[in-house]
Length: 236
Length: 287
Image (tube, rainbow over all chains, first blue to last red; front, side):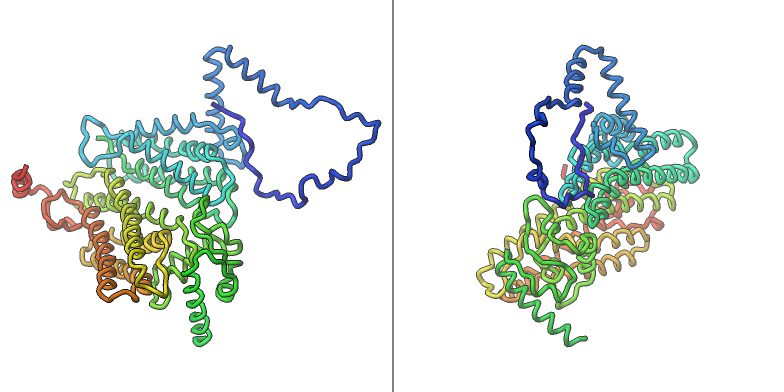
C-alpha cells in the first residue's frame, strides 16, 4: 500500500518572479536542435515495477510492505526532521497499532460490568475519529499537508503509547500497590511526551507559523486521552 | 485616559451597529484605531475555513483565540462579547475544542474522584467508567449546539420588534456559548477537592461568571423587546446553564453506588457496605 505521493508544498519558498518570466528572452537559433525524447526516467521505472509485482510471490509483497512499516516505526522512535513518513505514507502501520492497542485495552467480556474500561469498538472509534478530526482541524487552519499523510503521521506516533501499554500490562502482573502505579505513571508520561515530540516534529512544519499552537493543541488532547485510557486500565 | 477611552468606545458602538445591519460590509477605518490588526474584512462563515481567521495577517491567531477566552472569563457590562471580541468574525475553533476539552476533562476528573475516594476507603470498587466519556461528549456537544440553535431561532422570530440592532448570526451565537463554557474547565478541575461546600462555591462562582457573560451579550439584542419576553428569555438561558452545571456535578462526581437520592462526593461518613434493599424495592416495584 506504499505509494509515492507528491511532496507537500514547501512552505518556505515563495517564488518572487512570475512564471515564465525569462521565456521571452530566449531565442532559438537555427543550428541548435530542439528535438529529442521527453521521457521521465522515474515513470518508466514505476511502470516496470507495477507489472512485476503481479508475478512476484506473496512473501515478497508482504515483506516489502512490512519493511516499509518497520522503517517508519524506526523514524517514529528516533524522530528527526525527515520526509519519509510524509512522502510514502501508508495506513498499515496505524491499523496494526490501533488494533493491538484496542485488543489490549478492551474490557474482559466475561466479567463485563456496566462501567468498566472501553470496548474494542470504543478505542477504535476514538483513535480513528480523533485522527480524522485533528486532520480536518489542521486542514481548516490552512496547513499544506494532505489528508492521508496527516492520518499516517498521527497513527504511527501512537507507537510509543502502544509500547507503554505493553509495559503496563507486564508491570500489572506484579503485586498491585503504589510502587506499581508510580512505575506505570512514569512510563506513560514518558511515552506520551515521546508521542507528542514525534508528531510535532512531522506536523508542525506544515502549518503557518501563527497557527502552530492552535494545530498542536488537539494533538496533545488526543494523545492525552489515549494515555489516560492506558493508565486507568485494570485487568479484571 | 478615561475620556479618550469613552470617546473611542462610543464611536465603535455606532460602527458596530452599522455593521450589525449589514454584516457583509467591510470596514477599515474604525478598528484601526483600537487594535493592531491589519484590515478588518468581515467574512463570516466562508466555506473552506473556520470563519474569517485566515483574514487576519498580523495578529497571531493563537493570540486571537486566547483573547476571546479572556473576554469570556471577565464579562464587563459595557463590552458585548460579540461586538467587542468577536468583531463579527466568529470562529468555530474555540467552541469546538473547548467542548471537546470540557467533555474529556469531565470524564477524567470524575474518574479521578473515584480513585481518590477509593484510596481513602478501600472497600469502594474502582472501575475505569469509560461510558462517562460518551455521555459527557454527547451532552456537552448537544448543549453547545442545540441551545444556540433554539436561541437563534427565537431571536430571529422576534426580529420584527427590534429596530436598532439585528439579531446575531447562528455562528456568533454558537461562538458565544462555546467560549462561555470555557470557565467550566477550571471549575471541574477544582471539583477534585473533596470538600462539598467548596465545590458548591466554585460551581456557583463559575456559573455566575458564565451566565453573566451570556446575559451581557444578549442584553442589547433583547432590551428592545417587551419586558416579559426579555425576562423570560434571559432567565431561560441562565436556567439551562445552571442545569448543565448541576447535572455535571451530580452525574460525574458521585463516587458511590446510588444508595441515596443526592449522592455527596465525599464518602468518609458513609461506609459502602450498607446493603441496598431500601432502594431496590422502590426501583423494582414499577417494573
